[in-house]
Each structure stands twice: as structure tokens, then as C-alpha cells.
Image (cartoon, rainbow, N blue to C red; front, side, top):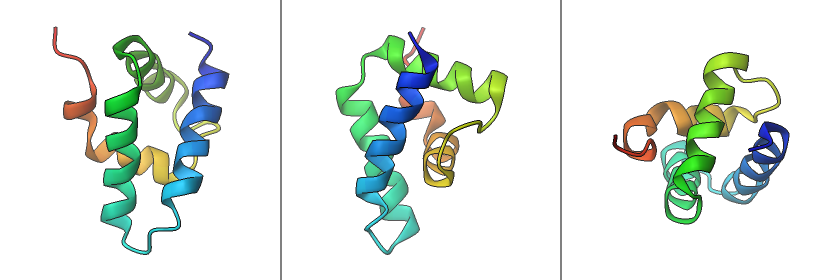
Length: 77
């Protein structure tokens, strides 16, 4: 997976949900979308990017959503 493409996609999702004034709802929206529509391989690659490169390129709201919802977003096993 190309992490640059995943970062762009995650940031695009965040741009939509950032219209939500409640930060918790924004975070839940971002993580909910990623959890429902992203293949487990994509989610693992995005977390690998976060773990290895930090927040490089990611919007703050994406980093917050991934941090708050990490356990539910990472595939089991």
C-alpha cells in the first residue's frame, strides 16, 4: 500500500467530518468511515505509517481519530 495515497484519502475523509463542531463526533465519524470502508490491509498500512513516520502528512483530526479508536480499527489477529 502506498502510504502517501492512504494519507491523502484519510485527510480527505477528515476534511468532510471536520465540519462537525463536536470533536468527539468528528473523531467518531473519521474512524467509523475508515472502519467500514477500508480494507484491513489499508488500515494496517495507515497505522504503520503513523507508528513509523509519526503524524507526517496527516491532519490533526486523523491522528486524534486513529489514536482514540486504534483498538477498534486494527484487525484482530
